[in-house]
Length: 122
Image (tube, rainbow, N blue to C red; front, top):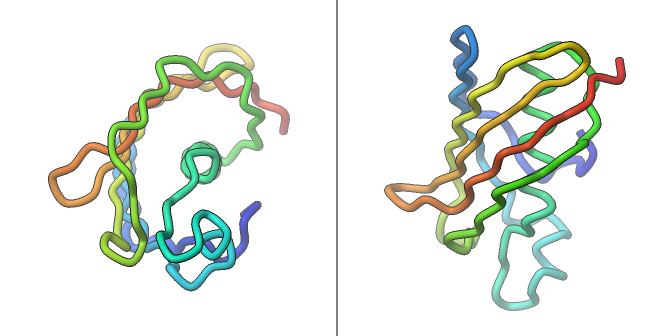
């Protein structure tokens, strides 16, 4: 985990190419003190890193973000108000790459949509 202590996995369900994950954000983490003081917001780059790490867990492979397209931040995630988020990852593997279409939400609110291609490096 690149950003140690930022989140913990509550549930991890893996079907053939679909992964359903529930994650608890740790609102006391230092990243939220700086982003932003008094009004914590989950940084977009941290959400993308989380998607990478969960895809690595599902595939058992080390990945490197190669292409990120169709990134849409649709709602702010405040860990003090919404500390549990859900991720849906639809994956497919082709040669040396893993393609992921993902969404991140809390309650009934869609917060992020992302299509990404990760190069398999290990």
